[in-house]
Amino acid sequence: MPLPMHRRRSRLLQAVLHWASWSSAWESSIMAETPLDRLRSAYADPLGVAQARKDAGARLVGSFLNSVPIELVLAAGLDPIRLQGMPADTPLRASAYMEEYFDGEVRAIFEAMLAGRYALLDLLVVPRSSEVYLQLYYLIREIPRWEPQARLPETSLFDLLQTPGYTTARYNLGRTKALAEQLAAIGGRAIDDTALSAAIVDANRLRTALAEASVLWRGPSPRLSGSDALCVIGAASVLDPADAIAQINALVAEPPPELARNGPRLLIKGSPQHDIRFTALVESCGAEVVAHDHLGGDRTFETLVSEEGNPWEALVHHYQREIPGPRAYPQAREDARFIALAEAAAVDGVIIQHDEWDDTLGWEYPDQKRLLDARGLPVLFLKRQPYFDPPQDEQRRAVTGFIESITGGAA
Image (tube, rainbow, N blue to C red; front, top):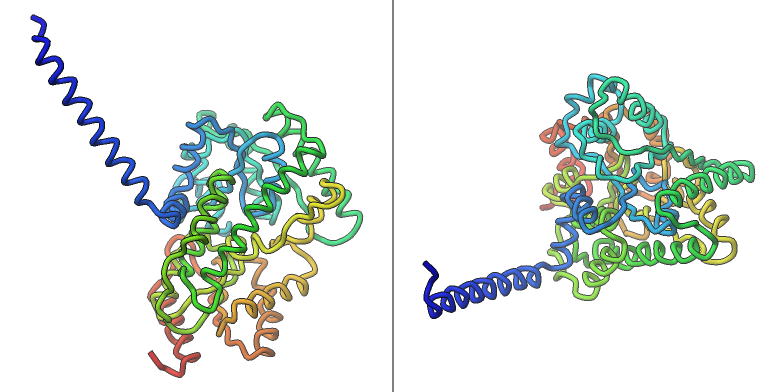
């Protein structure tokens, strides 16, 4: 039996009032979220961000490290996202295929791939930044033979060389244009000089926003911890670039209050720190982490791509000569940039942490220590650090002792 008219109107009014109340609460929660909250959330859940972007219609091109030109992805009308390993991805399935001496983060990446979490990508571009990533690419291509049910994205290898010289530049130009053709086929839009020039400008805007934000953690009176600095840098690589720029600019416009001074200013260097575990540990020991020199740190945005001349030549030069990487050469040039960052951040000391199976970065340490010794900067070298189960008690004792050696034991 139909309800009387007045009761139907009453229920309709209650529904409208309920929706209005929920809508108001939702808007309040959104308005209460600060730019730093947004950046922290994106950093903490990059695959959640990727899924949200995918659900909104993005065609995602994933990559690792910083040696895949996001400018090509943008010029093709696609959506770049930089992926990273997560320590929670213990390599249970991955260990059946991948030896334990692979970098911990690469093993975590492979575990996530086998779990199907990268299946949402329209393309995955694996850079040949080091031998371990080349082997990762081969494993990805081989897995369908062993696990036909595995949900893996289409995968491409980008072979970037970072030795100087004309011949290397010509090779890199060929590889860059081959990747551009593949991206254009997916995006349905040819990458011409005009599109690439516009994409370079857009990517430079993101680098500029990060550089302007870096004063919040590197300046004389930091407003962001080293942990939050990693959140800001990492979030910039997983959010839509325009969204990232907006959030970072808003953070700079209305920054948090100054942090209480908390001990010596330190720089963390070495293997990529794509999670905040170690930085948070160092800060909990009584130090200020004001800079990171690794593939997830400050040097990822230190240099802009030239916006003058031929955009293809400018892009190749940038990724061949200007980005940090384990295959960058000559090493003396990279070390000079490391020292420049340490001096710009006015650090009191440096902590270098290397992955348990590192076979590259360790060779650079003697020269880097000599450079630091010449400037009176103390250094703590933590080598062979496990990725999945680091010895945090041992690390804490070492870091605490290092801080005390700088401060003379003062609290």
